[in-house]
Amino acid sequence: MQEKPVQENKMGVMPVGRLLVNMSLPMMISMFVLSLYNIVDSIFVAKINEEALTAVSMAFPFQMLMVSFGLGTAVGVNALLSMRLGQKNQEAVNKSAMNGIFLAAVTYVFFAILCLIFVPPYFRSQTQNQSIIDDGIIYLSICMLLGFGMFGQMMFDRLLQATGKTIWTMASQLVGTIFNIIFDPILIFGLGPFPKMGIAGAAAATVAGQILGACVSLAFNLKANHEVQFKLKGFRPDPTVILQIYKVGAPSIVLQAVGSLTTYTLNLILGMFKGIADTAIAVYGVYFKLNSFVFMPVFGLNSGMVPIIAFNYGAKKPDRIKRVIKLAIIAACCIMTVGVSLFEFFPKQLFELFNASDQMLEIGIPALRTIAPSFMGAAVCICLGSVFQALGSASYSMFVSIARQLLFLLPSAYLLSLTGKINNVWWCFIIAETISITLSLFFFARVKKNKIG
Image 1 (spheres, rainbow, N blue to C red):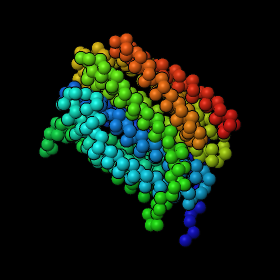
Image 2 (cartoon, helix red, strand yellow):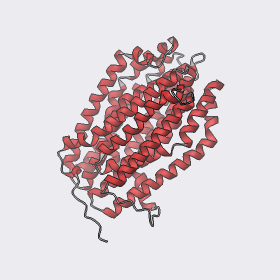
Image 3 (spheres, one colour):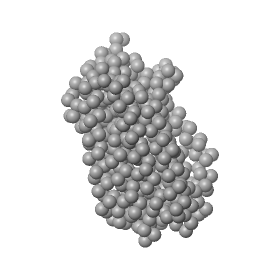
Image 4 (cartoon, rainbow, N blue to C red):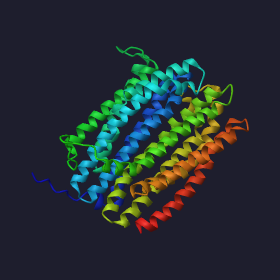
């Protein structure tokens, strides 16, 4: 049976400004709603007690590690599939999609095994408070052992996104996120016919929403994603395709994985401040939840940008690539300006959402105000990192992410902690972002000269 010819994709013909909005806005909305879920989740957990909030904060680095592998693999599939669409190679498109789904399943199994071995010692390495350890083990174990929905949704959503069907991606993410927001208080506090589950209820609402979102996204792929032909019969993992996926996706994995290591290490550094250690870690956890409110829409913007650049690179249209980069950076900076304003002018109100104690306010308000200016540099770095990935210069993005966090942020945080003043530690974000934007601009000049023209 003769395969259907691939029609001209909108990523190669639609005006760039309208295309970026068309591709990115649904992702930005869904990522914004997802960030609201993360904040709402912690708000309800904080109502249990501060120890529960600290446990969730300590679990966050391990959750980031899961996201790093799941999202990084999906980004690799996204870029590769978009490039193959630009080249009008239907067989390669199908192989990219099927190998991506296979890798999502393998990644879930890997983390489920990892959970059984490492979760208890992981929490014991950060605190001696047994209540925090117990809550943390319960919460993280549920998220990891039932995390197949998260990995599935990431992959299925990126398959939709790669073919320009971002409206379906937004719909699947909204379904899962809204479910999370509704069932968080119901399962935590035992409302109506549901039992009171405490912190386990927060984890249960999370994984249930992820599974629902994955099912919806799979249904959309099978019904609406006609540019990809899903063929299970005769499928065999293709090492060449897998290598191509990780050649593009590895920097995203490294970026997030290094972020996970950085968060964990900063928790240990904050743990050196005797008497306020657990509260300081809770403050850092709240910062990350609030941070996602600003950063998630930017990541959504870049998720829409990557397939556009990859497609037009494959189609040899450099002018479209340059324009989308310019527009994306301007939009990211505008979003970050809103975030900086919120952190600088309303830090007390933000922390009061989390039932903040006086001690948490004393530590948290200066933290938000000190870190906020670094968001502007982050906007540029995030956009340029996505450009490197989309154009196959992933090693640049990888180097910048490693240098920022392992070579500059962590050492400066440790050295600043030796002053004995916790407020000094937060300046490590400004130091690291200043250096990383310098490196990003240097590498972009090389990419522009050698690949874009």
